[in-house]
Length: 112
Length: 114
Image 1 (cartoon, each protein chain N blue to C red):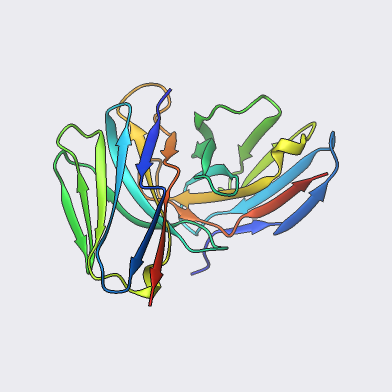
Image 2 (cartoon, rainbow over the protein chains, first blue to last red):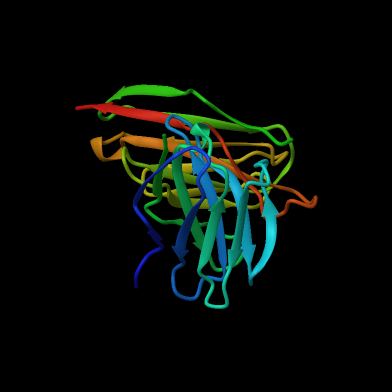
């Protein structure tokens, strides 16, 4: 079975631009979570979706939004990019919203 | 808000030595998970602990969840070079409105010298 996939793998954007990151969960997994990981730190929780409903939100500004589609794939959108948004964005899926999560390879976002 | 702290931040060991990392939460947890991230890789799920005082073993790895469900530890016996990486604990708050939120510690970076 394929693992969690994310696209794109790398992305370079300019301050003020918008970005959309995509995630496909492991087949059968209904929960998708998004994390931001800055070098040298643990992943910071952004959102969790389960059965297409938001089940958790981290301490990120409203510039960050997400959604989950009927096929359980997900998008993370970030508006008005700032230099500080440069990070590895990780998507993780699981069977439900309480079990261990399986992470994708991440999208490396660089904002210049 | 909830905080999860891990110590030590770095640990250098000789191959064959034991290693332990500790995790402490500012709030009571419903469960705690442990992940391993190799350099340049993504976190890989190791285990989840749910019950107060729970102990689980995976080969040379032993995981414990404290009686108060606010702390946890990971112990590796006789480290090998393949154990190199960053070990993260991650906890979910017991109750509250952010049930889906998983809070990660800052991780312990393990280096194993052959």
